[in-house]
Structure formats: structure tokens, C-alpha cells
Image 1 (cartoon, rainbow, N blue to C red):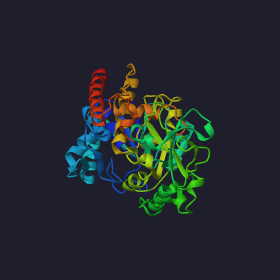
Image 2 (image 1 turned 90 degrees about the vertical axis):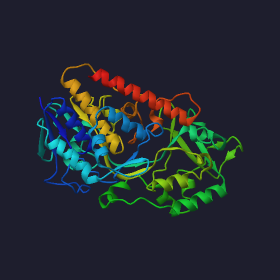
Image 3 (image 1 turned 45 degrees about the vertical axis):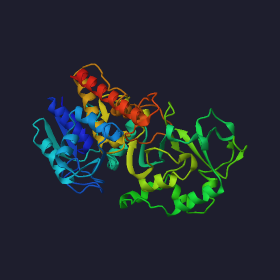
Image 4 (image 1 turned 180 degrees about the vertical axis):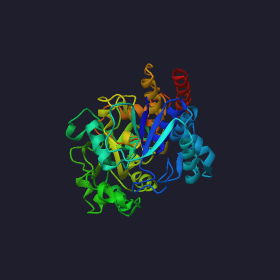
Length: 430
């Protein structure tokens, strides 16, 4: 049986090459070179359309670096190509875009088990094994078809920053819900008038990220960036996401001048979302400005807020833990459309989807990678019930916590645990 892989980006390339190298026949579909999305320019596969950086290479201190090492152990083509095309970038792994894409393209076109077909797929094939890896700019007909399978489909990514719980200054914050209606699921970050005014003045002049022309019409329809809201007037935020009403500060017994609420992002309470703070500020500006809120003065940002054109499914409702649809277990989803965010995360999901698809295709027992790995934790995140689901990138906050006070040592131990789990996974699948 031939497996169809739709999309020749990072996730699709990983999936196609993994299957082909294991003797599985693959039909790889992509618009290129007959047509292009608004973001793509090159005829080559695995094109990097934004930055040429794959983020940190620090295995024991950064989750993005740890994820790369997990993929190296699993034989990722993305990591192989990155190593051969890397350029100096300090502690990050950056690549020559052309060399990177050319290497992967050559591997695909020279593989006898891969048949490449330049064609727009308008409807998801459900009569055989299929991996959908069409990325954030999936064409309209296919998006509609995917939406019918998934039950829902989102067309932009508008999300607020996520903060590590143990980096919140609780001396400047308090736990509680508005008018005490809830179970203490929020952390409240009060500001007095001077603190708010300083924060506001910094926010309205902070530098924003540049949107692509094709993103501008979609991004702001359903969600207003906090900096745009702030520009409407100095008190606008105090009647919006920084509304203090119903939040009694136990230190004063009164409502603060302004209060930011942080909402749990996971059941364990290791990550908190800045409620209502969807933003298009540059990442460095987010850290600088949002850290002016007293409770966030030492905040560790596990994920910065983003607002850009994207297409992703409501994975917690639609997908099994192996990336297959609950209603169509032979159809798998990988890459950004599955709810992971970032180059390496997308590649990793493509590799996992292929591993799981091959085992199912060959009638072998299901083996899922441990949630103690970044790959496994991401998989768990996107397939676990979440009423406020948004795409997620690699970070230590999604990993099962360890009771170690020293943050550097805790990350090192998490990394060691992760790599050991990946090696066990490799033994199991081979």
C-alpha cells in the first residue's frame, strides 16, 4: 500500500523520507513547482519562509535545543540537513536556506520509494493511509475538507504569552477568581497607578513585528492585539484585559488600579497564560514591556504572543495521541496544522506521525513516545482537552515537572530523563 503525504515542507519531508527509508512506498504531493502559496518562493522542498534560525542548540538548558537532540537520535533529515548547511549564529543553530532546502530536496527526489506529484489536493483522501502536512497556508479547498474531518479549523494564530509558574513573583501577586466565582484557577497581578502608567507608556511605543501582506486581512478580525487596544485611550485596558473589578487584593482589601489575570495553561499549573494579551509586539519588546508588571519582573516566557496567518485544527478534539483523526484512524496530521509551532517542532511531528503510521500500516502494536520527552510532551499537549487551545512550541513547562529547586539543575535533569526516554523509544520501535 502506498502512503500519501500531502505537503513537502519540513513535516512532510520528514514523514516521506522516514517511510521511504523503511521500505514504504510514498506518494508525496505539493503545489510546487506548478504553483506557490503567498509565502513560498523557491521550487525546493522544506523551504524556510521566515527566519533561517532553528533556535537554541543548548541541549541541557533550553527545550528547543533538547528537541533538536531528540530528533538527532531519531535520525531526522531536518537535523542532518541543518548540520551540513549551518552558519555561525552563536548559541543558536542557523542555516543557509538554499543549501538546507537543496539537501532535503535531493534526498527526496533521489529516493526510489518516493513518487513526487505536483498537484493541488482539494479533498483529504480517507480511503488509505494519508499524512496531512500542508502547513499554515493550506489552500482553501483542502482547508474546507480538513475542517470537515476535524470538526473545526482555525485560520489565524492569535495567542497571548505563556509564563512559567515558578517565575511569577507571588509576593506581588495573589490567587483568586473574579468575585470569588471559581476554584482559584487564576493568579492576579495588581498594579498601582504609577506602575500602570509606566507600563502603558512603554506599551504604546513598543516595536511591533511586521506582518506579511497576505496576513493582514485575517489576523485582526477575531482578536485585537493588546497594543492596538491600548492606543485607543489610556484607560481602555483598565476596562478590558486589565480590569480590576471583582479582584480584591488581600494585602489592601481593595481592587487595584489595574490587574492582569494569569490563567492556568495546563492541569498541573506549571504554565500560565496572560489573559487577553494577544499581541504582535516583537519578542524582545514583549519581555521588556510585560516584565514591567511587578509580578512578572522575573518572568520566564515559555512562549511569546503571536499574531500571524495560520491554519490549525482543534487537535484536542480531533486527534488521537498518535496524530491520527479519531474518526479516520488512517489519516494523520503533522506540522503546524496539527497545533505545534516552529520549524523543528513541525519536523518532529512529521517524523512521529510517520513512525506511528508505519506501525499501524504494518499491523504492529502502538508504541507512543514518552511524555518525558519534548516530542512526547508536545504530542500530549495538542491531544489533551483544552478549552483555550492554541499552538505550542517547545518549552520545559510542558514537560512533567521535577521537584528540584535549582532551575538550571532541574532543566539538566529533565534533559537527561528525556534523552534516556528517546533511546528507550528507539529500541521499542526497532
